[in-house]
Length: 451
Ligand code: AMP
Image (tube, rainbow, N blue to C red):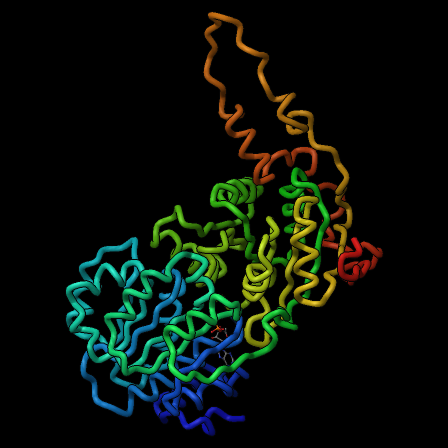
């Protein structure tokens, strides 16, 4: 089906063609006609399906058909990265129309954002917290809103943004068109749709439970202390040339980045302790190929829309299957292929099994050729006991611990990113191999719960 048959404005179609898209993705084909009919819409689609264009293209098309009168469209998204990403998309699709766009998010000066609001940009993309701060006292600027989009609503719910969104929505005109996008449709999410939408249409693309078919998935069963070594080992394979690594904590992300940099692998990090500028710089360097590995936490990674990511590595396995699907959706985007590699240790067993039940698929277990995944932890890491000082004698004065002391030891055990000396890359540099012995192929295939 060509874009032309969807009823979009000619200026938008021209821009879309210049972007290089040849036909709408399924979510676009399903959602765009409803939006153009001015219907409220619930879109259930994971990232990587083209959902951003599914709401921006028809909104821009409708904006193009009537004169500007201040802010007419408001898109709310959970993270700054996602806001910037949506803005970039909007600018690309609106390049042949006289449209003004403003972004609003925390971590940067309010002043230019306030100015943009007061000048009445046609379309505003915002995170909920800063928007709520700025909207108070400027309600009039939002009196002409015709379109409200809540993007990644499930994530906004997880991040505790619903009260802020409720307050914002109260200040908007009741007569408006609301589009609600979420990767999942839980009971809580359904409740929210009842609150914010009127007689919505629902489009659901690809069972949410099925990660993109273009992504090959594999699991390395590996104890915590060998994870750093395994990552370095896998990175000896040049095929892993644009790699997104997920960790559970920001400190874990920093530690891994340091290890990789020490090994001569160009690495960036993106997590909530980094400033907005640092995050954007890391993202741009990753996109431009200046760094090979980007280490991210789930929340910071929400807006990562980078084409060409060859591998996603779940260094820490995500406890929630939604996060797994989101993470691996960062590779295999649009029609490209990608690989998702998960490091799974004993404590992740339940989460892995739950994921396999959810996706109704077993994920192949593979082994890295030339890597000893049974190497014991070096004595220092084998337990707190060996790392602990004897009890202090009454009156004894002690020198403070060095950086290898207790605090560090504890946090290492928590995120498992230390202790790699015993598990450092050894032997062959030939990438990964299936447990069955075939290089790069699918190893033993486990059914649900058969581990
Ligand atoms: P999204 O799900 O919105 O994050 O989009 C995923 C990726 O697909 C982005 O890199 C878009 O630029 C790209 N994309 C969106 N629509 C199309 C299309 N119709 N054809 C090809 N790529 C697309």
